[in-house]
Length: 192
Image (cartoon, rainbow, N blue to C red; front, side):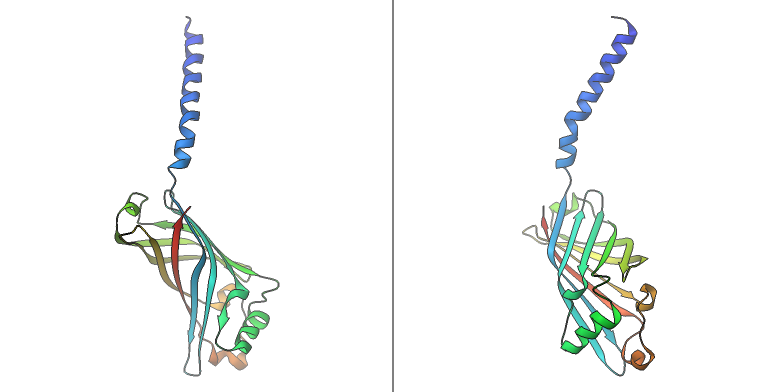
């Protein structure tokens, strides 16, 4: 067999091997998700404390690559006072125009292999947070916890400045709303 035919045969052989391994590579991905993650934001001033909870957070995390994405429906934030919720959606967040906040980024510091054993893993989270149509980079710390049953939980805390995302706070209520909101994320992931 001449060397040209042999080279072609080797190339075809390599392509076949690569194609046969592709499904295994896809199966090896460790993906986790939830549709009922919990995000809280808290504003403390000497005038007033404001807290809201959202238990309809959707997120997908690929532990193999670290890629993570969130979608948060703004109208799903619940306040103790109905009037606060109405003002939040209509006057500040423009929920009809900007119905959701998103985060797209990466979790590093834990591997898919780590998730096969119980433990608590400190992680770094980096990415882009889009609120009110304005995207800003975010870097924060978090924790991934795997319990003895294999359940995977994720948590993190970070601050968000409303003005960084084009959210205007009228001067008349500026003293009632903190310059930085404390955001707390708590997730119970399920394997996909």
